Amino acid sequence: MDPPYESANSTTALRIISAALEKGIDVNVFAYEGAVCLPLKDQAPHANPVKGTSVEEEEHPTTKAFISSLLAMGKLTWVNCGLCVDERGATNVVDGVKRGSPADFFKMASESTNTLVIPTK
Amino acid sequence: MIRYVFIQSRDPFEAREPQFLEETAIAVKERGHEVTVFLVQNGVLAARQSTRRLERLTQAGVTLLADNLSLRERGIRNEELAPSVQESEIGTLVDEIVQENTKAIWH
Image 1 (cartoon, one colour):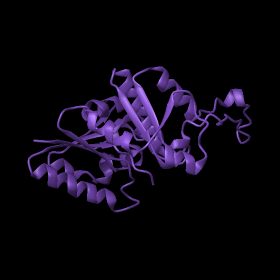
Image 2 (image 1 turned 120 degrees about the vertical axis):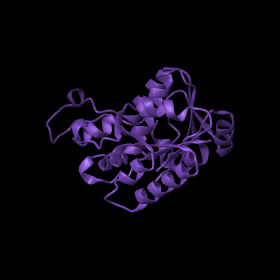
Image 3 (image 1 turned 60 degrees about the vertical axis):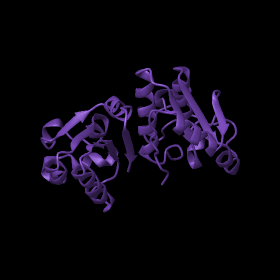
């Protein structure tokens, strides 16, 4: 995946996760590099001056809201790479997001039916 | 036999990597494995029949699926699709990935 609002990969990843959870499948996510910013709590929706819409009218989606919704469905474990978090100062994340290391990714992959890697750019 | 699911997200007119994926998918299929290519994001730009971009994969017997949201975002109507391409939900991709003995490869 990529950082928020930089590529369609992250949107597709969130759609895949959502579809899997709706099917009752346990999902593990190991987010690395810029993707650790996807659940940042400091994200804020904004107005759209081009269209002249207010914050409320725009209903601008934030990736932190998507991830919170997915975590609320249960059966999702989201681990942010700790090294990537420290590099970016991306520590203030929504509730439920954990901190880990590539060892967690190895464990997830070892214990899962399958693993899909969506590389960064 | 192993099932391979290649997820093609890249614009076939922008770079040559999608051609590499096509060659890989055909080579795997020729070795007796089951192969699905799921087109998503700009990868669906190959799905229009008029582009003739998927003929080799079709002839090789590869299953071709295209993400419906990606198609709608790019204004590609169902009647424009190559006959071998099936419009699919993202949930279909999940169903493909969670099968036993399946390798899922994102490109």
